Length: 429
Ligand code: AMP
Ligand code: GLY
Image 1 (cartoon, rainbow, N blue to C red):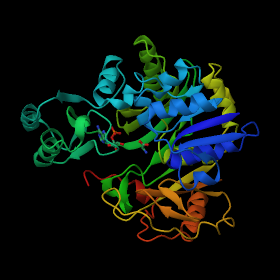
Image 2 (cartoon, helix red, strand yellow):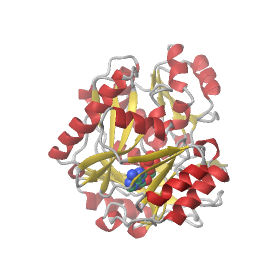
Image 3 (tube, rainbow, N blue to C red):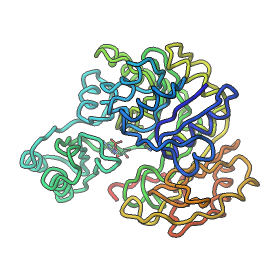
């Protein structure tokens, strides 16, 4: 089997890692890939969002399976374009990807199908009306830009001034571009977050092992929101009673709702949940796997990923084929100094080669590139040190032991990933 993986982050490295373990996979391309993926697949320099470029490559090379990592190609219609040409692909259609591509589309979907979610206070297309609405609302208040903003589109405003500042930056100063033209105001939910990811053919589905990510930049759950500074997986995150509630109140109504709306959803669906005192409520949908959740999930995978995904891509999905290692896993993100704000790149990374002594540890690359024979930083999130073990404590200890031997100038990471201290919730920043 020849496989094309679209994307070039830690999530895609995790996919390549597991796809390569299959004896039936003879070739993997990754577009565009990164410095670490280059050691395990052939990187092709096509941007992940470039649908015509990806299609031309696939028509020439005829992969037996294409797996899409990030949201941008999906929102740009890559799955529709591939399917129209009989190229097997895992990923939702452009319209289905609107569940992530438009927060307003997604909220309307949730409300229409009576799926529990934060209360909607209003949708606004002009800054005067949005600002006027602020007076009557309670704080903290959540404001979301409608479109894709690479993690910058949501603010939890603790007072009216902060809310006004976000509205001004999005709607008057265009800091989020077109994605910030429409804003949505919603209720702030309190509780523990849970990343519940399923893979579905629109009817049958399998849920992947539960994960939780650490979104804030600094220890103690402080600092600005990031794409994720680490994640862990543990079955105890999802007791049976909670799984049953999520299935009954969220997953089934979501799949029925999509079908009722005439949308056949094929691919991964990430359901971001807040477990509130009133039960689980949907914070967001993503039309893809999470990053860094995928790194922790794949560390526990114990079956042939290529077989399951190929079956799905040719409408023979069998959700019972998933097998998972018991125990736990963790992914610790090593980021560039300054992330999620401005950071510099091109710093050489040392210590990557002497990690073989660490049992069960895999270093997954995100923002790296190969310059000559040196691996250097090329992004905000640089590496995800990933480990699976019988207990979470062991997984965390093994991963941090490996982190200690890796170095690059300005390396920044959280020291409390996978620990209780790392999960304390704080309102605002
Ligand atoms: P989203 O892109 O919608 O997932 O939002 C990003 C992050 O913002 C979520 O993972 C939560 O941490 C937080 N968030 C989003 N919506 C809410 C809400 N209604 N209440 C509290 N936190 C939220
Ligand atoms: N870690 C959250 C996300 O992938 O959106």
